[in-house]
Amino acid sequence: MIFSTTKQLVSFPGASKQLPSLLSALGVSRPLIVTDAGILEAGLLSPLLASLPAASVFADVVPDPTTTNVLSCVEAYLHSGCDGVVGFGGGSSMDVAKVAAYLAVTPTPLEECWGVDMLGRRRAPLVQVPTTAGTGSEVTPVSILTKAGEGGGAGGPVSKAGIVSPTLLPDLAVLDGELTLSLPAATTAHTGVDAMVHAIEAFTCRTKKNPLSDALAKEALVVLHGNIREAVRDGSCVDARSNMLYGSMLAGMAFGNAPVGAVHALAYPLGSIFKGLVDDLGIPRSLGSLGVKEKDLGALCDEGMKQTRLLPNNVRELGREEAAKIYQSIM
Image (cartoon, rainbow, N blue to C red):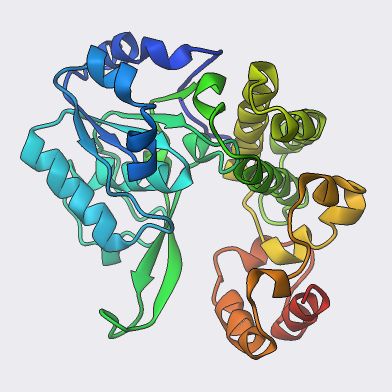
């Protein structure tokens, strides 16, 4: 068994206030803080920027970040003469931060990075600070980006692809429940269930199942299930918020070493496993309620079958016909 995760974890309410000294210990004095416009506008970065006058900010991360987004971040790092990267935000910001930290030190065409273990071992110092409890990206060796398809570009086909390498594991993850207090209830619910699905998939992984991931996944489900309702109903509860971050991190450690599989196939029974939870949290139960039409299902199946990095990990083999039935059953 090989088990890898982030080198150091700091987790308690207010932990982000220690970032200046933690960065200094890593030899970082001019970090590039990778985030999105919403985080910046909400003022979550203000205390950190006040204590790190030499820091630069890249706040152009978009949801489902693109390869162009990453390359712009690398350019900002080099232009500002930075010496480290801090991912500060949700999964998108942390995923951009991972790849930018690598490319800034090891210039490589992105098309040579896709897949598993395609990276070298040199990158800039990397710290991750999650502001949502869901992706667990702060402890995984994975970055998911949106890239143009063959002959892509403006109007061209796009698809999601992964870069997986131990080089992307950060030097430090800082979990501060106080940073999540302003999250809306809907975002808290969606990201929390996302973390629970990560734990379920890690526990049922077929290709790299291991006892450490199993233990982490089970504990993650206990913690997340025990705190998600309170975090949604009372967003000001620091204990519930901190526990959600902790549970998300445990799930991230689990699936970072026992990879996720066919997400929709395993998300489907979630409502029966945690009876009433989805309804309690106000999460839509059908694809139709999210604007998906019957005519879209064929394209969804086609794209799903392209995820050849993930599908082999599934506990049961999933083909296009099974995927179509799953999509149809939740319309």
